[in-house]
Image (spheres, rainbow, N blue to C red):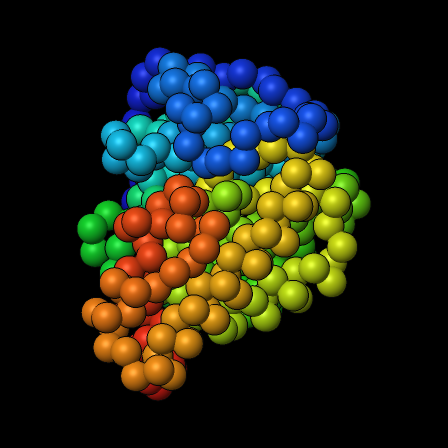
Length: 309
């Protein structure tokens, strides 16, 4: 039996910001301060289309702040949330933000990423919520459950079709990528795809439990849906046009990292030598590159050495 407790939300700032097209002079970055934003600008809610919203909250160390994004879909049959937040307090704020928008209860929470920055607050969701996860995420969620985490009620293999009210929602596993069990939430009528951490907007990828070569294959599969809007798991939720551009730039980044690390591996460089010599070109300036670059090199080396199944 899952035991969840509520946390009283503290001060909450909810800005109903529509996603609108912006000029090409928008600063492409995941760093709030570079865009002139401060802590007091968050959390905030953006309306993607009617009844589909994104909740952006700040996370990360003081010198490297960035957003963690949750999507929620309001229907006459309840509210579905795609990815929670990283602690009880922030998830409680998310629950409060949803209650400010609709009287419909939260009925489903999709654990799209099994990482703690998206799951550690899951006990703040109301009792009776149905948690959904991919089967490959179970080991990570079981480990977290020993410290108060929430186990899923429904396990997805490749696909789960839901109808909430009159809205069709598809929960898709398209292959191992950022984790072993990444789930996409696809709204086929609106052509909106919540990508969780498979796509980060202008942020260097995190590789600690990734499958670098399969990641690109999963993104190829996602493109077959022909989404109009790609919602990232981290980084700003910009206009649909910019998000689509950044989706493909993120793929370029993943390929560049994989190619560079593979080159160093083939040349006989040790993993420590590769960390010192790797050149990721323009992606070296992306948010998180200094911390995530070495992690990625070690993970890709392990994959190339056959140490990861």
